[in-house]
Image (cartoon, rainbow, N blue to C red):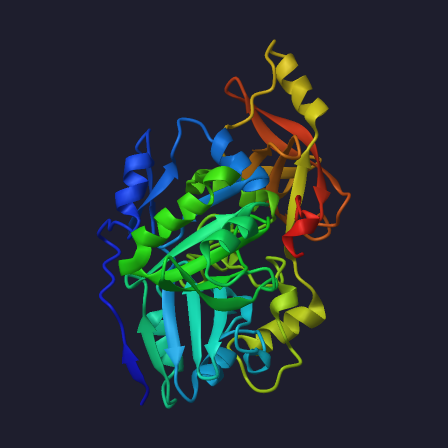
Length: 408
């Protein structure tokens, strides 16, 4: 039997992250959101402009501690993750990070997150929702230890074009050589950290992982190092706008976990969510959902996540008909909006937002075959003065925004 241990994780209680002493003082509008059973800052200002532009022009400091975090270690650690995910875990190098989803036996997504190879027999797994039971069920008969670190480990995301400059000032060792989706150990203010070149904004960025007891010291050190480079504490609402521009989806917003779905139509496969590149069907051995994913790979997907650009002139016409300028939301809208081809509904938007950097109204959309082909002309429902209307839109390839410096 595997050795399994976990920290108490009461999701029914709203907990404070290790950075709460700083974030609560800076959160002027008291705009709080619930994330993973924690209080998370929605925005530090009354508006999102300053925080959003910090992501795109300077550096945004985001508390991502509510992410569910597990350490998976032991002789069979790689074997367990190889079985659970469609990625070829045995090919991972120490210090490498994989993004992946994981599925049920029907090849439908349960959750998604990152796997970091900390050592030859040690990994860190992040998830949006608790996965301990699923890990334990699949670890039966293996020599592996699964430990939840959610409350013991704090994490910050430093995102934006100036993030590397700031980290080079704050860290004992420079991060210039750290490649995209790689991790290295370092120290900030004398405290041990691991720094991964990852993020959820589609920009140059890093995530910093540390012991919860060191959180405030490291926050202060980063704020000091970034003072002359526009470092800005940033909430999850500005991050939400950026992740849509980057074509990144979110559990319980853009897809439903197969374990929570009421009907088959609510479930999504990696192929349907644009994650076909993470499904390594050429890897050796069994992994959960393999047969279903092999079948879908052969036969194709009926649905596909895609990008949608709403035609601005068409939107103007709808509002001009009632004597108004176009109205766009000030933050990302997490809500289902029908998409049509003629009179027929062929899909729906799951998250939509105005993109300040692109100056476009965009959306993540789920479309039936063949309407997810880039260049397809469709219409999206808009509500104008309490009346439902349709505005022209075009299907596009994700991501919407992909700066060249992200991977350099």
